[in-house]
Image 1 (cartoon, rainbow, N blue to C red):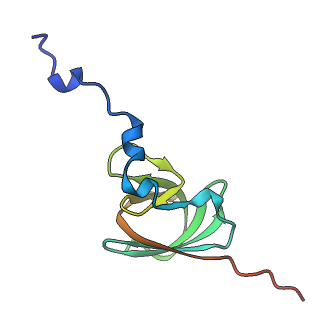
Image 2: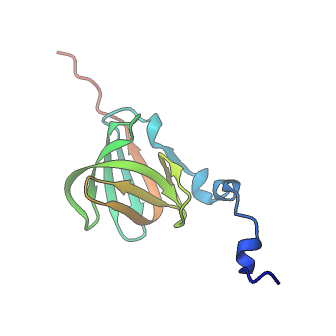
Length: 125
């Protein structure tokens, strides 16, 4: 025996394992949504309302849960199963949503449901 921990001898878990997580196919790609789109994310313990500000840079305003009683600008980091792997820009059912603000990084409880309200139609005067 080499004295090394046997876990170190095992091969690393491939990222394709993460892709097989349920939330990786049942969810939304934040980066495909137009500005003004409202996303309601129900997690196990909270409800969040995200409004797309800049989808390309994954910027949104979030309200909800105990951490965001007032609208707060965040960056949508993506979906995670709780480990270090993250599916960037994704909000997936069965996974946790990770967001970051200027002061902190927040990981929600498991996402249970997602609903999308399209952006308000442009008014023509």
